Length: 309
Image (cartoon, rainbow, N blue to C red; front, side):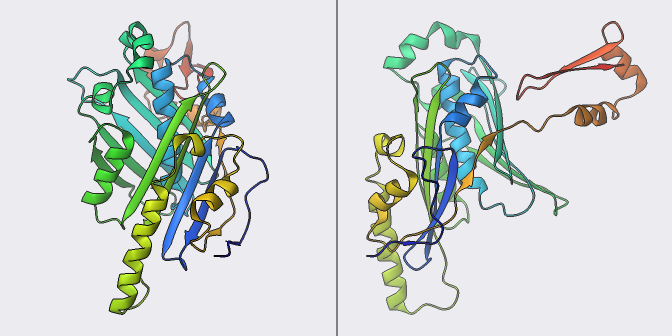
């Protein structure tokens, strides 16, 4: 079938972006996320072990592919944390992405990772070995809403993909399928990652039994096509996002929409730090100070702020 392109993605092959698309007369929507240089830029602010970098890259991709549905001004946060009373290799990963596509992330991890890094290359630990009996928390903090939307997901299966499929099955969300991959790059602290998500949309009116049957057939056909996507294809720098989607769904009447760029950029600022300190009493601020100055380091970007007490 003819591919209909509404707004084509950039001609660059592998750029950091979210590419929305529709299939089968808009009854199925999807998003493709691919991350490269911006992940490297974000990870360069820290000296995390390779295992931590891998999971950060995957969580960023997952947050990006989920956050594009947040159409209003605000911040989407995806956090994975272990149980406080359990041993885990990674204690916490937090990723923020705002409406402009600015991303930031940080992690807390156990030093014993460093003693097993070479072992992890040959025998990568599964999700439970990394986080224990942990949880994923999704939070949408939107400017037009007083209360934040939040969902909590117990980690299930051997991977983040397994956990997300468990969440989609257990929640009231529309039927959803996900592919998520990452790999290390040629440079230190370089990880490329990508994700594709498909979601089956409800009919706007009352469908006939024939339409329902056709819709189900289309859904399972597209799931089968998505299942053919390999990690090598998803993370291939010589395959553009447009070509990747065309290769997957060229027979499914695909409509590719305008790509949304992603950028590693922290939201911390001197003004925000000053406003945060205004919430503390004079005595508290004096207690924070050393030689009359308060030093605050942003956990996300490692930038240091020095203020008078």
